[in-house]
Every structure is written in C-alpha cells, then in structure tokens.
Image (cartoon, rainbow, N blue to C red):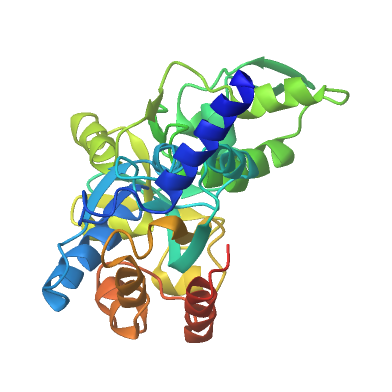
Length: 339
C-alpha cells in the first residue's frame, strides 16, 4: 500500500508539471543548443521581440547540440528550456531520455541548410582537401604497408605533395557539437573508408580507429566557433572546422579550403554539390506551448518567408534556404503536433 501511494504521488507530480503548474512563473522563451544555429536564432529572437511587443524577447544560449538536447530532455517545467537548437537530428537515445523524464511532445523543425568548412588564415597558402587527406592528418593510427601504425605524418605535404609544406595543426569540434557528428560521418568515416582499414577488425576496434585522434596537433574545441577562430589567430598554421555561415561572417580573416574540388558556397551546398553539408533544426517542447507565452508565434515567425526564404533576413546572415514547400510541410507538421 505504501509503495502504491508513493508511485501514485510521483505520477501526480509529473502530471502537474506536464500540465503547466509553472504557468505564472516564467514568461520568456528559453532556447539553447547548437553554436551553428546560435547566430540565426539570435537574429530571429531580436526580430521577434520587435515584431511582437506583447511577448518578451526570447533568451538564446549556446553550448552545442548535445548539451542543448540534454537540457531539453531534463523534463517539463519552469526550470527546463523550451527549445533546443540542433545541427543534426535528435538521436533515438536522446528521445528515450526525454520520454523517461516526461518530455513526450517533441516537435522537430527543420529550417534550412549549412555547410561544414575547413578554413585557415587568409594570409596562408591554399588548401585543396579530400576526406582521406583529413583522415590521414588527424587519425591516431593510419594504414602503412597494410597495417595500422602510429600516425607518422608531421606536415600536410607528407600526406600529399599537392598540400602546403606546413605542420599539421587542426582545431575540430568536440563531441558536444552536432558539427562533430556530421564531420565524423562525412569526412572521417569517408576518409577512413578510402584509406582502408585492416580486414577482420572488430566493430569496437573499427569504431576506435574512427574516433581516436592524435594528441600532437589536433585540438578538440568544446566552446563555440569564436574559440576555434581564436586558435587560428594565435597559431596561423591552424586549420579550423567551422560552419559555412560563420566563415562567411569572418572571411576577411579566413581562407576556405575546397573539398573534393568544390568550393563551399550557398549555391554549391543548396545544389548538393559540396559534400560536407547538413540541414539545421530546432526542437520545440510541445508541452510548454500555451504555458510559456509566444512559443507558437515564435516558430511561425521563424519559419516565415521574410526570415528564412529567398532574399530573407537569415539568408543575408548566411543561412542556405530550403525549398518553400519543405518549409510549408514543416510548419503544417508543427501546428498539427507532429513529433
């Protein structure tokens, strides 16, 4: 009987939290997550505050996709965020955490595209990279004469004669960033496949070969892109990994590399020609709609043609617009409560 009462009390407490017991205690939308989405969401938040004076300007933070979704999935209520920005889709494991913590109405909103680029100091030499070159530069072990050995390459030119005779110094996103996961899939894994791995590797050893990077010359950046940019400024030999939109904002001090012979531009990403690109998202906690004022209006405003369409405010800030019919589909799914 005592156990049953305790369980019932827990269920009631969760239900109270889920149905808006915090209605009167917070009136500002709280957003966190991807550093790639941060500048776009910040612009929308400011514009929204001006366009809708009846609502407070949303507060937008960063910290990376993984960190933002972790906050998002902590539960329902006043002390949890309303929206998580993301530069990759939410994982099944993250959805499971959300469900365990009572976050059961998760609405995915895709709003455009971005590319992932390699950039170095504007005064430095040109880089024409391929995934296999990048893999050979950063992997802790690489294939030499048919077996895995500790990475012997000290300069880019040792990897390929077409590359600059510069020491290998890379600043890549740490695992808390959605950028890292796309980088792993479209650069590291693709490069490893071309370079080749020993036959008969166990799944565990293969995963280790793809995720273990050298300690000399490779720095994993847990902060946002400004920290990566600071690395480049302090060491001009550094090649950093950025979102295309961030590079566009700083192209006066940076030089972008080609990948597989393609220059990363809005046009080459939108056309599917540039190989390292991804859609951008944010996730809305449906259980907070109607409780925290302005969430539905914020999403509708974000997805408006003026914000994300051709010639829009966010395109001017570096967003690569998605087709208008895709945006209409996303908005309809959001308003219908699709998860």
